[in-house]
Length: 171
Ligand code: FEO
Image (cartoon, rainbow, N blue to C red; front, side, top):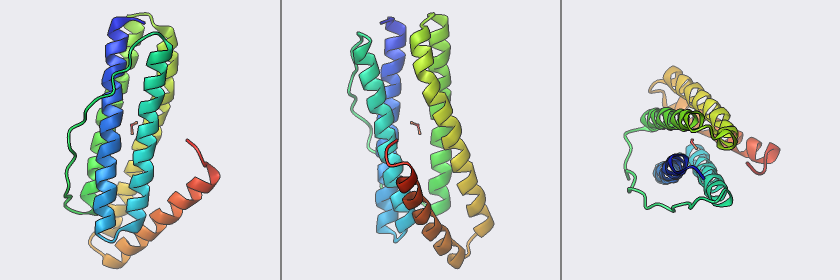
């Protein structure tokens, strides 16, 4: 496997692992603050990020490279409020998109079309994740500081996690 591509893929493994831990920290915070829907959403999201990481690990090893399983920095234990959690999530996803775009760029420079093809799955995934985060943030902006609205939002999020688990049991 091309060395530069291998390094970039391992860098992406770290980013996906860090994303998984970051969302796990958000899930735990939400659980401790009575936000059950948000907590379920974040636990599921954390699992998805782990899946993104595993998919990269397997790809690197199967293509003759060496996947490096990274240590990750400890994520925060406290968050300001629900809105700031989703703002952080969007900001984080935007940085992951940049990293995926950089990976695409390296694949093209190195003429590694197989990896380029593989990475397209992540390009689509990032589009979906950013769009979802923006939709949720729009809803939270409409709710403002209304506690009743916040309660409904959390309940609706729980229902949407359950619905997507039924329609799409495995990602
Ligand atoms: Fe795997 Fe949300 O980036």
